Image (tube, rainbow over all chains, first blue to last red; front, side, top):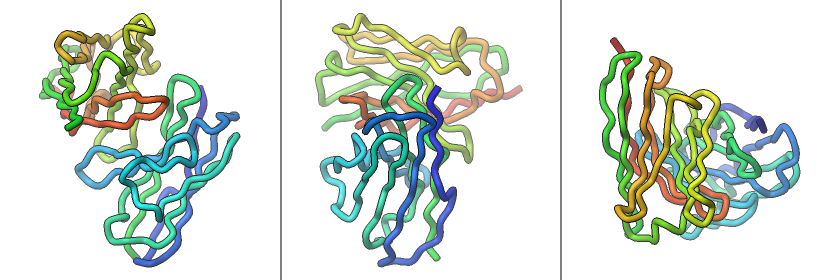
Length: 107
Length: 119
């Protein structure tokens, strides 16, 4: 199985900050990497698919990059609604494992 | 509106069984593979399994943690997917999400249904 490791596990930031979350795969997954956002008590929603493609309706302050084993999710200017937990997921091979999540809190 | 609605969750004793349902609407259900993903209380997301579409022979795959105990099926005529869970363990306690697969991304999620395994 391909293991996904996110860092950091938690992060405190302020509105307007630029934030970067990283995700590392245990083997190359080319660009088969998705990012999801989950708010408390809600289902996850996809933000980025295939490493760098913005899902329809997602604000442009979210960007994804990377290929192979190393990936990043960047939020250019944090908004109040961005405080949530973020998960990466590889879709290169089943099982399509998720990272452990990164909780983004208000500083 | 594209929508997935799960049902069937509840409280069950260890060793018991439960069947979850997922009703889809607003899209051509038969075109898509469908996954179940679960989330234990206070924990992260765990993929449970997949049911592929007719073009892919309705093949199924499962996480190692549920293989042999859980069975995923679908009825395209009813736009529905099911998760039959047998020999339930306390560690199966979670919110179970039905998701739509679309070109290697889970792009639509239901609201989830809660399964509690406890004596």
